[in-house]
Image (tube, rainbow, N blue to C red; front, top):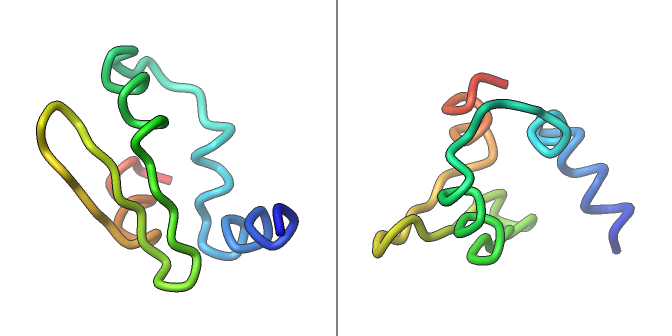
Length: 67
């Protein structure tokens, strides 16, 4: 299962995100990862920041963080 997930991230360009180092807001990151849901079938990420619930396709998310 995990190998399939890694391959899907590589196919969509998101694998760079998980090894990407950047000066992010640590409070936001601490909330992002525990609330992150990854749907590999629909190719969408869902997460919370503050009280907001957000979602993006793999492609949209990669573009937003400039991968």
